[in-house]
Figure 1 (cartoon, rainbow, N blue to C red):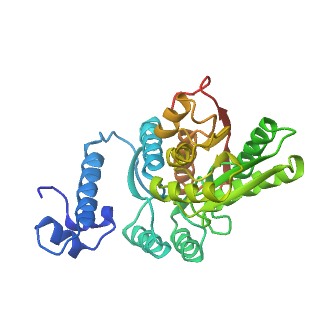
Figure 2: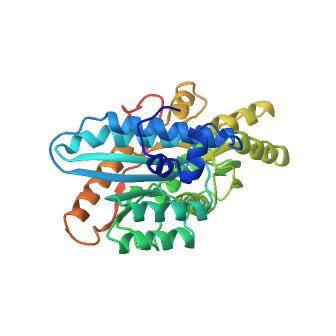
Length: 341
């Protein structure tokens, strides 16, 4: 496998050991196909990073670590790559470490490797669990800014949070549901990718609170741990629909929306209202097809800009903490007001 990169650089980008990468590069036996694909993806990422034009000025490297479905991580990648050139003459090199599912222990190990290798900042979307909170503390103690993205780690020693007010987003979804079914009963299927993510938990809390206080006739059926993947989320949705004949709406907090809609159709069930999060490619298509009624959107490019500013401020010594949070606005998107993304 021809490449101009050091084995240790490929291993770092892929999140694998140098021995494993060496086996892949030299075509030795005993390597899983998935591992070989990770090595190839790492080489493509390094080639992409190398091909960027480096202008005069400061050069900063940041590591973006995310556990999320590919459709969302690609939207994040596009946002960061679009906004980075606006900070010229400072050049930001973004190293992306994405996986649809990761064990907390593996995320913590990756954060430790990034700390030991060196970086100007870490952008992190990860579960709120002690192992990861401790790894964040080690990064901050080493003088490396950690910006949590989309879902916060409020008890961690992170520099700042960039993203929407998740509780307000859930409250907005509840208002849309409540007004749609005002005066009538309804049962809403609420999908969560994983209960480990604080941001999704806050959306659900906001959603439940507003329904409980203002629309008590509306019932909730929750499914969780589909990790935003179509196969897993679709199976959970189908099981819930089979068990609850009164489900007639959906609030998708955690993704897998096409699979949820397909589950409604296979069951011969009408989904009178479907509310989703984020204008990724899949949701944009579903919105234009009128299969999704509303998308709760916040501008990832705004989050990227805030992240770059926070890292520059930290590196220049302007305070340890930068106010903690920079909340981006939540927009209610219909087929008629889709923003340029």
